[in-house]
Length: 284
Image 1 (spheres, rainbow, N blue to C red):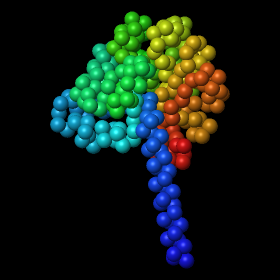
Image 2 (cartoon, rainbow, N blue to C red):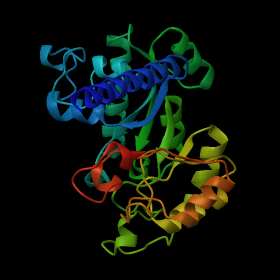
Image 3 (tube, rainbow, N blue to C red):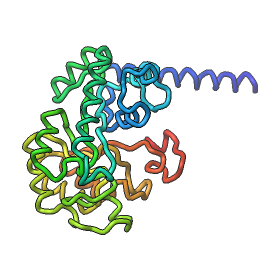
Image 4 (cartoon, rainbow, N blue to C red):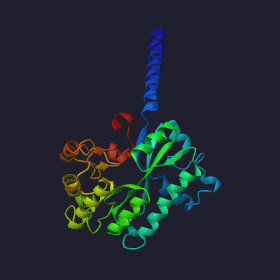
């Protein structure tokens, strides 16, 4: 009996190694592209954006989920870095603060050129893949950060923004956020206001992806019906699997399918399992 259990254990290990080898082979030719990473926010909180501090070295950084060794071990070939500022900057210094966070991302690329390559289009992403670098793109998280200005939107585009999350955890003057669905916030635009719809048209014209993570269901549906280009959810999971209001309900997922849009699954446990812990099978 002991010999039989030893045999099956050995067979399981060999099968596991085989599956891992297959996964590695696939990922060497088809690198992972991650839609949302908050490392720039951590660099502000931990180091006040002072990237030259010895303890801020991304080759050795231990206080965060992300560092250069982990990116390489995970075969991350493309990364949207999140340029984020909280809702309390709205109607205050939001534009200045978001420019500083976008600057941090550009400085990361300059400080670690052997690892990161800042890019703004698909051909440059492929070039970064061929060079074995992490193609680094900028997503701006929160529509409050453009201060209701199409001019600011266009300026952030020229500085490298390639997606804009329409809201964070607060309404903007032109779009409602997910807390409306939970009853914590009052609906103001009941989806998108007329200006919000103009904003989406300008995003389509520029080539800035519309990110619907954090928005209300009404905002999701307005955007999916208005946008001439596919939209994304940069970090949202499935409501039918975990009924959290940050997740995407089935009727919206059908609109995602119909418009060739994309949902990138959020791995945060509360959105995967509706609890403080989640398993890999639950993520899958």
